[in-house]
Length: 258
Ligand code: 13P
Image (cartoon, rainbow, N blue to C red; front, side, top):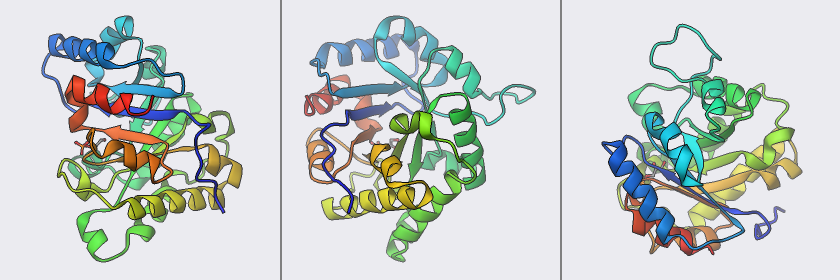
């Protein structure tokens, strides 16, 4: 079946700072602590996703790849408060988170909107970090596989040409019940979702595409559990919330993958 040996792909560690920190001064400080704490590694990508207003200021002095936490699906126009893939791209931002469960929950972001954002990101050569995952209710009803397959099919609906950017697309499995709760799935559960994602992408596209897309885990990751979530599951990396706001803890996680 699928090759679970992903050693040749760079590991990807993403910091999702969500709506933190409160000021650019604190942001700058956090970047400095992370930079100082991280040892160099060639086969590792570290991506920071701060609040959008800090992006251009960080860009100038950080050396990290940056991601925006959300984009709108239209290229330009009368959409107050929104940021397009083009605006992000022109700031030299490489990645965009799409479909985070907090946006699905608090802003009623639907699978259809997620699909439009995927299309806009890919069209404008911004690499999507697509977030999927089941709620606690769905887990209890034992419908995780169906939920994940459905989210993937809808996110990639009508997207035929992803070839040019396959190796930059990330799919992050973030069980909603594991976000910020200190609860995490078992290694076996993460491994089986990893295989399910590969199988679904293979059915939608082909096996080569499924092997090239990076699949990440997110939800209550810290420096104690991070290594196993990648090393024992075949995952290609991690999407980290809370622990990425502590500069030395985030650097410790990154350094596990040197
Ligand atoms: P926590 O690491 O705080 O659980 O958040 C995960 C997450 O939502 C990253 O996108």
